[in-house]
Every structure is written in C-alpha cells, then in structure tokens.
Length: 209
Image (cartoon, rainbow, N blue to C red; front, side, top):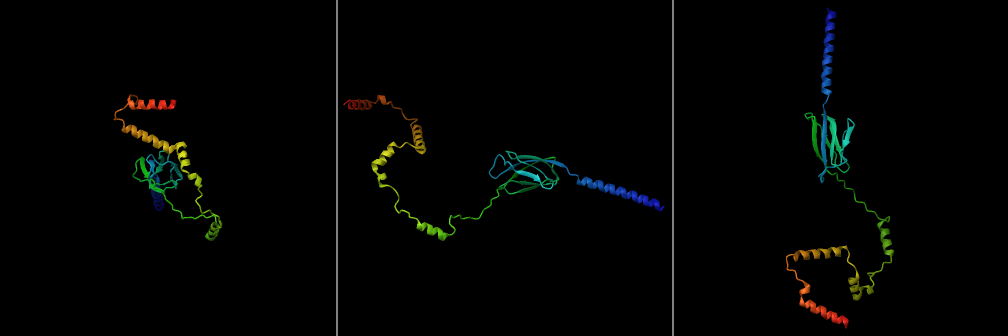
C-alpha cells in the first residue's frame, strides 16, 4: 500500500511540474510586433535620416531612411533606444497591449553642448605679446597717397569704371520700378515732338561747322 502511495505521489509531482513548465513557457513566449514610425527633428518636416533604432538586449536594430521612416520587428515589452549624433537619446517601451502592427512618431531634441572658451595666442604670455607690438615700427599716417584724392581723377574713375553686380541690380530694379509706374501713363512718340526735330537740326549744323 505504501508503494502505491509513492507511485501516485510521483505521478502527481510529474504532472505538476509539467503544468508549471507549460505555464512558464506560455508566459515567456512574447508576441512579435512590427514596429514602424517616423523620426522628426525640431526643424525638419520630411523626417530625420540616419537615426539608429535598436534593442540593446536583443542586439537587433535598424536605421531610418532619407525620409525618416523605419520598420523593424520587436517583442512586446522591449525597450527600444533611438539615437542620433547631435540629438538627445530617446527610449520607447513596446506596450504589451500593442497590436500586431504598431506605428509611432518620435521627435528628436537637439543636444546642445557648450564648450568652454579657449583663447589662442601666438605668444606664450601677454607680456611677450605687448613687447612684440611695441617693437614694431608702425607708421602713424593713414597710408593714403594724397595724389589719389584728386577730384578730376576721381571723376574720371567714376565715369570709366564699369558697374559691378550690385550696381547692375540697382539699375535693373530702378528700370523695372519705372516701367511699372509708367504702365498706365500715356505713351509719347519722340519723333512727333517738334522741339526734338529743332534740336536735331541744330546739332547737325553744329557738327558740319
């Protein structure tokens, strides 16, 4: 009778261990979720490319494409790390109540690091720098030749120097503004002006003489 009780005890013990192992296996088995999303920056509209999205414990991950989109398989409860150079690292935990396909939008925050001010001098000490400056023979005049300030020479340079890009742009804008303002003004024909003809004949006689 004692042997029978021992057999039943062993049998129940084996069944109990089997049920417990089955429950433990069922609890340890996690659902696979397809995690997708877009990574945005503080000043980006189309997305942030080259961002690393990975699960450190599992050793798997991916990177966002040129539009900031990514997609990777994860398990429920995974801790996902999102990092990029110049941005603060973000963390996201996959919820257990997530559906089979999960989409998220992550906004990265710029990681601003201020460095201490560094003063670079070509001299070992400030005293050596002062002595080097005092040893220089610096002329006290402004270094401008007074002959270059001749009024006739400046007027000649003003007439003969071609316009640069800025002057051409101003000339074009003045012409455009004038054409817009004169768009609704009456148009005059200079050939119908008798004063113009009189001035023309006068200049013609003067050239002949």
